[in-house]
Image (tube, rainbow, N blue to C red; front, side, top):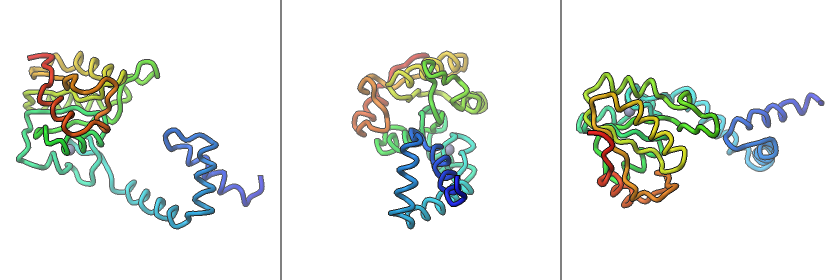
Length: 201
Ligand SMILES: [Zn+2]
């Protein structure tokens, strides 16, 4: 390959790091940015570089933040005895918009999916167990999605956490089957938290 093409092929290879982007999509993105949106490409470079340097995981809840603790974990008015477990940071935003939980969160940063070989290594389980073992948690609310993966994750979490002396609940099935928290309206979400199903007292 001619030397002038090396940068382009490197870019296409790098873009394949994006989720659901294969060679064809990577080529389209690269061509689009270089031909039509160089300013946008510069912004991606600058903001991605800035985010890589600054964004880290909250020490307590594991969500993305820029300090040792996120805004919610640092807020002393929140009820630290109730811990809601969600899959992704975006789920926290949904819950906060629904104003249905004034406790703390823990973000798994993923889910378990036995059919895809996504085992316990795909979630931040050790950090979660540490969190529950080290803090006086009275209730754990499992708020994973009502998808096959979310339910599998909820099942495994329950099996692991039931040994701890805290109540365990799961969002009620007011959530539609296959429902992902990210896309549920605030009213339905709040109801599924208020009517959560107690799995263990
Ligand atoms: Zn936090």
